[in-house]
Image (cartoon, rainbow, N blue to C red):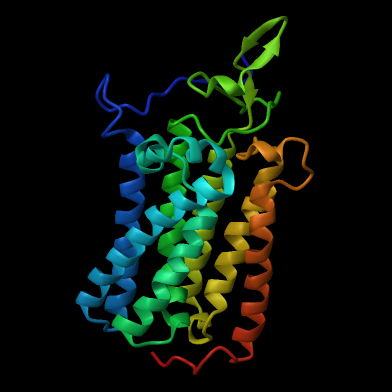
Length: 278
């Protein structure tokens, strides 16, 4: 009886070509779905379509640049310092959600000032559901890239990543071999999917969007709280994570979760701005 899944899916769409690849296709698919989700929200609230077009530009650039630089500086700076040209090789994987989150916050601040002319909390409450579904597809991209893998496991849903990095091979009976591992990327993807469903429901079926910041605060708790939990079964992405009880990803997640709790409290007390009228 085979307990586990031998995962040998290739990210290549065309044999012998690294790009375009399945990782990039999933990344773009997530962004497109997110675009149509927020387009529906903007249409519901009578926001001019040109504002949506500009929002897409702001968010896409911030996501790619921020997530890439986050990975470079938070997780693998020694390697990129020796080979700086590799920073541009986004198609090879290596994106950090914490870096993307910081960059998106900065981008949305300028968007709210220069384009929407609304409170930043207004756009944050509406952008988080699309970001959550985009994150779901990005983690599926990590799955097909055999990266961001989990710790070894004997659970029946363990994945044996047959194209994983050689540095992740385990010594078994004197030989380096692939072993079954927690599919950490899949865990995160599922968590982001449920976060999307919850945030989408909060926007359309409740009046929480009238309390600025509450939906955004919930997003921070859902996404980074789940990320903190999954990190316990994930292989640390930074060399310094070996032997650490709380790894880099968890340390970076804690401030976001705390911020989410504070924002929800302030939002319910209507301390983050004027109440939105629909």
